[in-house]
Image 1 (cartoon, rainbow, N blue to C red):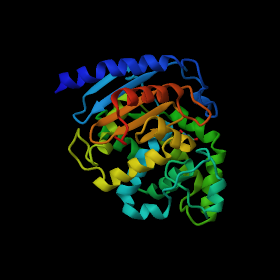
Image 2 (tube, rainbow, N blue to C red):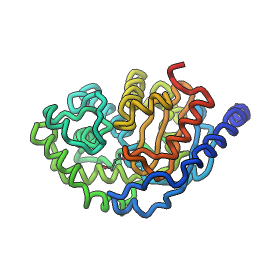
Image 3 (cartoon, rainbow, N blue to C red):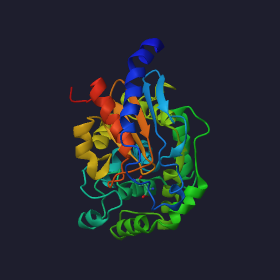
Length: 311
Ligand code: GLN
């Protein structure tokens, strides 16, 4: 019931928020995207959702922020819905010890990105989603609106344009893939769409709700609609566990023990299989591009509520 969910999580969520206070001021906001430099760096929010879509939240959980790489989960899901297992011809399922914008392995592995949560991996899937009928960004915005139940979710044009102007590394990755035959469309068009999807803005509450299908065997609890097969939901979670926080992923699995996905806007989504989801957000990042306070809050919550998938 609503009451028991509230009672069991209220104190834990408050405690996790308080624990994350200890690292207030630690880290730097992403500054390579000019429009992201201006966010108030010490904001913090966290929302826990259960499979009924009930929410326990703390702090700035209803403020929208730039989702950045959190969008890669939804891009992958849309890629799977469009292409099924064919999508795995474009991108691998291997962890990487290199940063999210690295292109070194891409050359060594013949233009196939190691996983869908690297920039190169998301770009390859974005390329597969370009169609004449509907823009890639509007298909992802529509999916997020449906999953979150929030019709106002949208991308921020200013942030998208700002990122596109400094997208040299992503453009390089796309051309490298094109050179290896793993890119079909004009690079600038796909990178522009990719930047728009990264510039989607949503709140912790909306993102926790939008991720619930991953905790619910592929079915969105809000609409009852199947988003992906159960096995695909398991596989997306496996990739989140092993690659969702980039080169920090092993450490995240050790400290939190949940499938997680981060973005340089400071958001982190975590899936608690068969139970619910968590989204934490705070803009200051560590050197791997993961939010310092969101990570601290998730670590605290996972330990206190014994959330690790490893029993
Ligand atoms: N839009 C960002 C980029 O392409 C996303 C990176 C991230 O959130 N890790 O660099």
